[in-house]
Image (cartoon, rainbow, N blue to C red; front, top):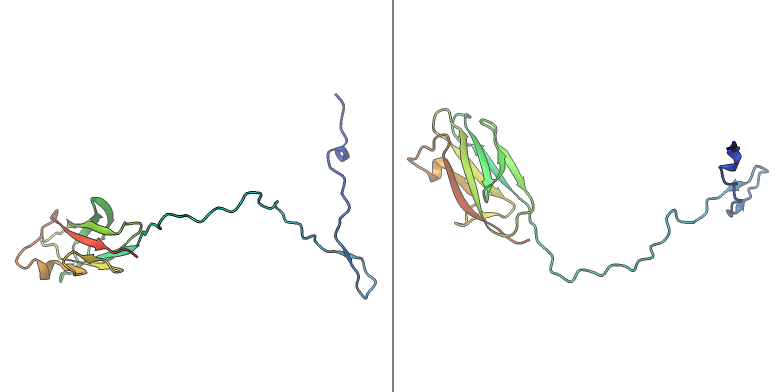
Length: 164
């Protein structure tokens, strides 16, 4: 074994091919950077445009809130059986939904907290979504007159997601 000098590990500094820029004042020459790219140009041909039809994945929103005189209820929202979001007690929540395919879907609202055993709620669909009856809103006081939805109660409605 023998020791290696550090200068043997580093390559020699190659002379630069950059032009020297002369100025009116006698100063040190300034080297200009070369126009060589940092990465080699692509050697692959460009990819062809897709010939299939685009997939439409619209986005929308569902807003749910406590609509009673007392802000004491909380709710859970699911779409097609998948939990989407929940509200805090007495609060409003707008649930943003992405990547839901156009067509018919089922929205389910569940009363998770109703201390007075009377869940009061309002559900609104946004961004062009509609329930199958043509409305964009469901309300417990207006639509369920005489019915008192207790804690644990749930109801489902079909809604339509239009194509873009």
